[in-house]
Image 1 (cartoon, rainbow, N blue to C red):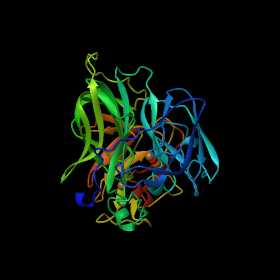
Image 2 (image 1 turned 135 degrees about the horizontal axis):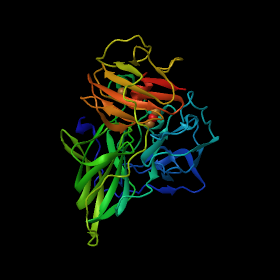
Image 3 (image 1 turned 45 degrees about the vertical axis):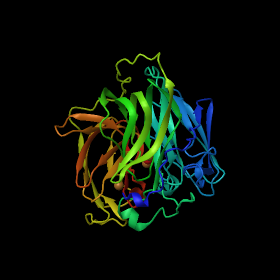
Image 4 (image 1 turned 135 degrees about the vertical axis):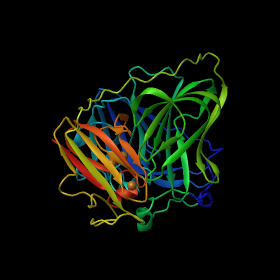
Length: 433
Ligand code: C2O
Ligand code: CU
């Protein structure tokens, strides 16, 4: 990335907190055109898409094990569908046009209803021409609250994204440029993080829920003014808190941190030209009541245990793109020689089957592979189970094995979450019977 192509950073901007919506009987989201101050105050506002008048959309807070109903009204002039990223829900509520539902046509409403089985940090976004609708702003946080929340003073969501825009705030409409699709995808020239709260006290203990909602950018994030641990990835609590060393979030990935505030908080993205400020969190005052104890693990996820021996071992080979391997698919990118959704699934599993999949990246770009409806274990070098994720980053030329218990029936998408690559052909699906 070249900073010369980057617009001014966000420091000294008053950040409008993300509005929150707690679970009532029915939550309502209206997809619509919004005008949002994305650039620093004083620069132009951006006409884009959002929900309920804002971008990002409201933060939805729901309870594990309790049915939630979300009425989505389409106030756009084109169809849409909303996906609840990372939630292991019923297939027909997954929000994927063609595979799981019909489009929500303009001025129509669809009610999504599901029971979230896991606590943690999730998000929602459009899943129709998503490389464009998400880039235009159709995203928001979805939090499944903890039955026993950790001992913190604040729970703050940090949603990060980037946009391609002019200095007057006008969004570029080059969402499907073939050159960028064949490379790293649509990348913004302006990036920032939206926080659900804009000030804390020194000494406060805070949970940060980081969400990378960008369509294609892998964010490396440095946070100043904190000391603490990583406690969850992609919504799922990790077994033991880990030191926060290098935070890398591929598109759609999440990370939860529990930290003590030691000074003014700055969220930075390192660039060759130095740190690029994504957001500030002001420190007002000191919390002298807080006695900072040990940071302990969050309550652990409850997922089926994989069988000792997987019953199938499949390979998903990523192909194509600029400077990548040739393939027979009829789009820019391919999985196993075919592009886009085919009539036959990449895998057919019986519910409860343990499957190992090798994601082999035979291209010149990193890819963030996302499986719908399930979480899977990343397998480390010695074959042992690593982190539970719903999206895994596989670097150019690298390969990663995952183990998944396919226990959720239905037709599930498996795709690159660099949404330009997905639209360029990196999409397939699996069937769980
Ligand atoms: Cu974030 Cu196919 O999804
Ligand atoms: Cu990709």
